[in-house]
Image 1 (cartoon, helix red, strand yellow):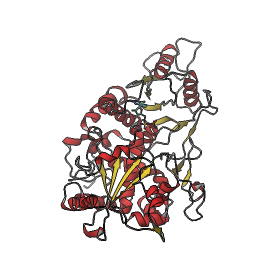
Image 2 (tube, protein in one colour; image 1 turned 30 degrees about the vertical axis):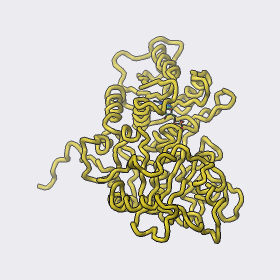
Image 3 (cartoon, rainbow, N blue to C red; image 1 turned 135 degrees about the horizontal axis):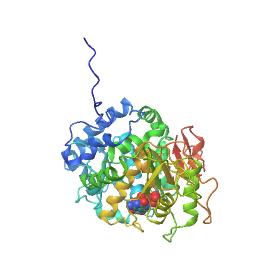
Image 4 (cartoon, rainbow, N blue to C red; image 1 turned 120 degrees about the horizontal axis):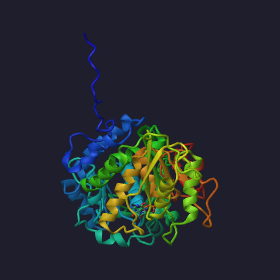
Length: 484
Ligand code: GDP
């Protein structure tokens, strides 16, 4: 007889459909192959083209990464004033990601953007550790580190790079002789300033003819606080490749994020202990991320009202009955919902928790309300603060339904990593609860807050959301761009 019984447990797809490389050490980075135990079964799969390009990237990284012979030889260019004629002698080109002053969400999104750009242009991504990267993230690539060595020749300049730096692409264009869209005497490195305050010169990065120039430069140093991937989709020479890599346009960060960002064992400990203690047993998990961009810490009533209006209107949580004290039928309730809240402030959490303690729900359900931390202020320089931030972003990504705050990159990372289309709380104006309070997002993709406004062909201003049906304005930011 050939009808064998079904296996009790389905084999776990710990490589996430081939997204992750096999064979890396499990103990030194438990999250990499354990994330599958916590995430829901995802409907989509990474494309076979993405998988093969990632394996190709890993081979390139091994050949060109820190301390390899090719790396050492390419470093030599930095010691001369020009890279000369023989750019291809090592076959290795680099993009060095350096950190902006903004918080972890911004950093994760710009780092993912830098990686996709590296993949598209056959560059090697190196990351300035900045004293915190190794505490938060495991090495993503097999064999050779992604961390920029501390003796990197121009590392002392990183902090001072800004839009005024003479080495920025925009400023080099202004000062160098430009002839037929070609820079004479290309420097050995270019600083790419893709921060929110960038101007037209730096925006030329998003034009095809400028990409043709940039291709020749061995070292690019990138500072960005943005998720600039949507605008890469609008560069004609990248279009076909991006379509092949991501047939599902709304899942770009979902795959890149799951590929790149694996919590270190310390962060994984924070994440899993919290999850297993408070969330694992609930029938449904609701995430609520509250980010208030006010100078005072709050809590603010208009924000609490907005959150409650959103979750009630969208049926994410049950209403309470304020007139009766006891509505639960005899016996133990059979369904529980856990609410995971994150905020710098504890006031919203306390109010919602107390509401469900003081009054019964009209459905008789039990609502458990939790918030891991309330740090009051952003402390990007503090190690434990950053580790908790990362653990909380990850916890939110494991919920079934998620409410996020407008403009928050912290929320964007959680939603995309988790494959969740969030309900986005609109940005309040004049400290008033917006009506409607929130909107269900069109896709799980992050919003590019500061897209270029320069038309490469017509050389004037442009609304780039008109160029592709897959690149639209964001729900929470009318001038932002997101993939759908
Ligand atoms: P954004 O400012 O909302 O776009 O998100 P960022 O992550 O870039 O910056 C906000 C920073 O403030 C985070 O990185 C944290 O350091 C801190 N922060 C904001 N909200 C929370 C929260 O709910 N929990 C924790 N632990 N930290 C938070």
